[in-house]
Length: 173
Image 1 (tube, rainbow, N blue to C red):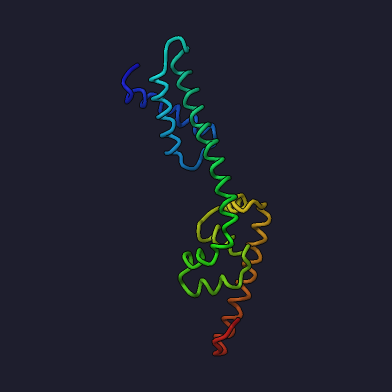
Image 2: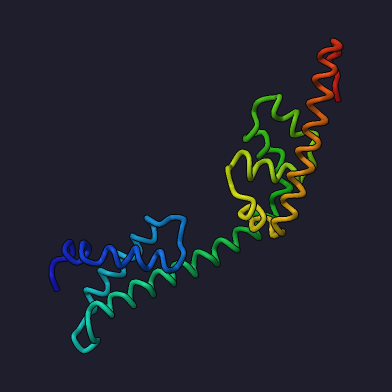
């Protein structure tokens, strides 16, 4: 075959097409690299008896990306189970890390643990409701109820705090 740089240039659109067809939206650069490695392996292992190079390269690249995707899926699910087991033990340390400012800690203190999970996941880490729901293995509706409860508590908390500040009292909880 030609030199690998020419092959890479010619087959880069194919690699991205495979990535899109598999609906991979995170870590696309990583999957592109997997595709390049598979393309290199296809170039090294190709013989004319295996048919057309394009077909062989396509199946090799798609196969490697699918294998990597399956491996990552298993790894992520293992980490999810393990992290859920240790989440309760680490919650205080994590909240100190995420929320060093006293006012934020104070406002989080009025929330339940589940409402804090929503606040951390959606507000501070910027994850979507669907991602938080998948992480904690609950439905989107459950996360939405955590959000609703948190917002209600915060409204009550800040209204009470505002009222006490107007009256000159320092205690508002």
